Amino acid sequence: MTRPPSVRLSTAGKLLGLSLPTIRVWIERGLLDEIDGSSPRRITLGSVLEVRPLVRELRALGRDRNLLEAVLARLDDERILSDRKLGRSLDEMRSGELTEITRRAGVGRPRRLG
Image (cartoon, rainbow, N blue to C red; front, top):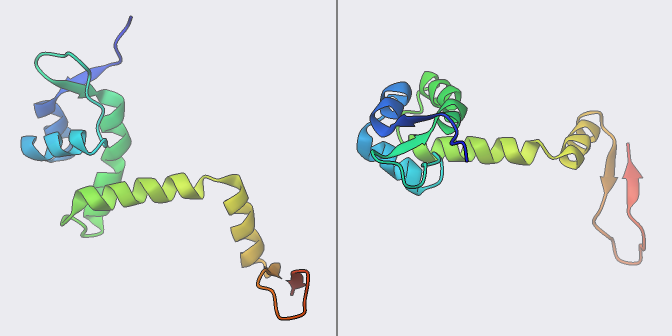
């Protein structure tokens, strides 16, 4: 089986501007993918390249503190926003096509607003 391109933890640290202990924490939290059984320990280059632009962007915005949580939140936001149904709903909301979904006493169906 062919292994994906990988880098040593120290190289990942240099690419991301993070310390080795921080790289290890990011691996434990699932943000960086470790290659099982590698010696010395290695992580996939793809996982490093996926988070690198986010790290740069967040640092440019002054978000150096709690960077792990900020990157995880950004990735979670991107995952949520990639949902087509949500995207459609947000587009409808922006254009003013709203549907009231709360029911009033005695009213059986939601009604379209706007």
